[in-house]
Image 1 (cartoon, rainbow, N blue to C red):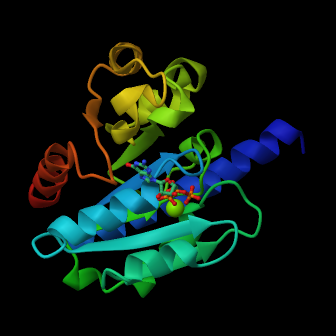
Image 2: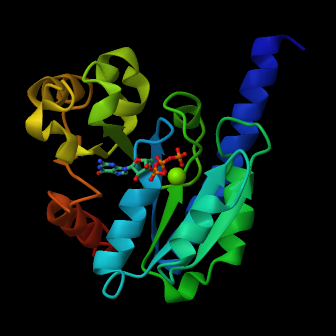
Length: 219
Ligand SMILES: Nc1nc2c(ncn2[C@@H]2O[C@H](COP(=O)(O)OP(=O)(O)OP(=O)(O)O)[C@@H](O)[C@H]2O)c(=O)[nH]1
Ligand SMILES: [Mg+2]
């Protein structure tokens, strides 16, 4: 079999499983989002802050994907929200099959929403559907404002862009043109919602909470 054929077969098997995950979530009436970014943009910090701030009114379950360790799942569990850790043992993205097993471990009936934190990687995870209702891409200001044009795939596919660590813009700690990111991301995806936020200070988080809540309630 040609290499390209093997690749197509893997993606095909993944999409079949992703569809099953979607049907499982729909049967239970739950929304699910797939959070994707480079390592260290602040995915877990954003989830911890979100659950701490609105977890009483919006019950969020988390699926964590990492190459190794359960550090991130432990950080989520410290908020008392349920979290299932997946270790990909070297793979650069989560597969729908791994998510299917993790979904079985979550108390789905007691949740309003499932969020998957994918493996830190801006490229590979965008090619693998997991059964989610939408992707959320996180870009931290320390990574540079050229990332939407350099890595267009994930920005084109996402429902939301969270521009994190905006606290670092104060005092010129990093050079980052927020207007450029808005323009470039919207050129790739005119429907994308963009929320500049800081998981550290909480700035801008309310608009993200409102969006997330409206999504969970609209199912
Ligand atoms: N200044 C600042 N630092 C932040 C913010 N959000 C996260 N950080 C820091 O950024 C670092 C990485 O945060 P994480 O939440 O672990 O990032 P992540 O995207 O989950 O990382 P991986 O799971 O390894 O891909 C930590 O040192 C956080 O304290 C923020 O809004 N402002
Ligand atoms: Mg993390």
